[in-house]
Length: 114
Image (spheres, rainbow, N blue to C red):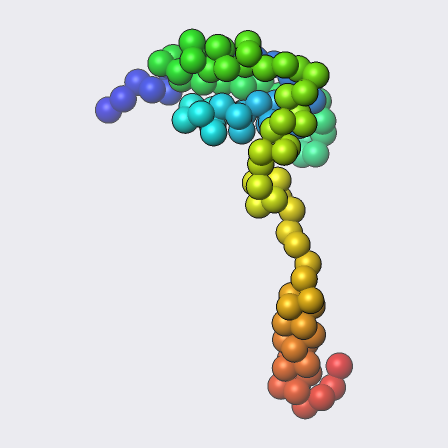
């Protein structure tokens, strides 16, 4: 049995969820396990967030965050993250044709009735 549950330390608090999530992704990309705690129980409420890290990662995580230029950090992270990491999906002609074909198949299975 491990006592890892008790080894979490508060690393930082952010006023906006997106800033906290961007910094959490930066830390994860550097191999650090991060836990996020929203400051509101209401989903979608942008009330801020707290980052927590394990004891053994605390110094390294703090060093990474200390070296962030806060003016350009968001831009750099967004530039380096893939569309999938950002939750962006690309609609292509193939996607549209696949969806149209799927819709036509469903109509023919129902006897052509909509």
